[in-house]
Length: 355
Ligand SMILES: *Cc1c(COP(=O)(O)O)cnc(C)c1O
Image 1: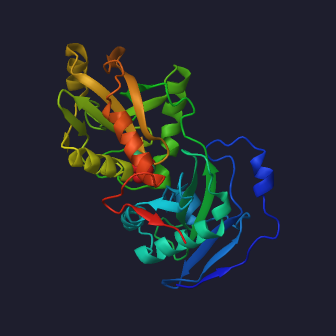
Image 2: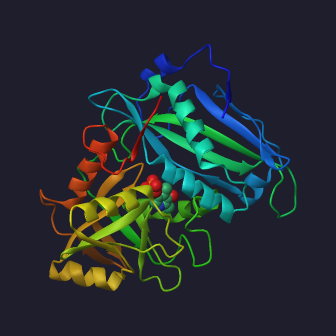
């Protein structure tokens, strides 16, 4: 696959070094754009990052026909080699999300090639500090202007990258979640398993009110009964109850996270009794009371593994046991980071070297 290139003559890299790195406040020099029209993808172009013209009636903005992805490029802490973590899983998920939203799919090899070349172009933007990374954000949206609610006839793929610091700045502090028993994120038959724009704006209001009450994140519950745990914000959620580790099963309302899938595999490798099923708030409340709720943690590309201290549910506090040194959350976090930063064996060939 050939990709056209027009490189910048005015890199922002030096200026960016003076800015304090957060999560998404700094962007790299280049982006990749590729249009779909007349039934096929056109040539991909890597160009200096700049605003893109948008048709004012673009169906993607009006009706939310758009999908996105999120992955990171990591610089090896010892060898300096840049690696992507399971980008083939992001390619597969983008395909599944696209199909759900009637968006033309992008062949996996082409997705991987676009990301490889874009990251290679801005390789100097991949941070050197461990736990920092170059976040890669591919998105496809309906660019055709029209008023009808129907699949568009033109689309645009845009891939941008951003050097990022760890998502939760206070890594040592475990999160406090609010189990949201009024608003829901995803209903059966809806789009919860697709990474599509429309799933996120409706979470802003509940998240803002949870934040105002002092919580770090929301624990989403099922839309039907408001009793089963689903996801923690933009992370999948895990519970260690007695001798088993469980995460909600992929029932259509859960986003199939790459970190979730990788954590389940590692736990299986380690001989931990790990599985997927429905987990009710009642079960969690009981486990918290009898002391068998040993750990709660979220999993996602941005935050890797984030420990959760407690969940507030209908005014009651569901707490995990006090943190211990042998926590699975910490072990998973170190294993994933070790593989991502090229420090540990990668027996499942999860990492793809860039360049
Ligand atoms: C992206 C996302 C996740 C995490 O997926 P990863 O592939 O692990 O980054 C979990 N839940 C939601 C709602 C998401 O959008």
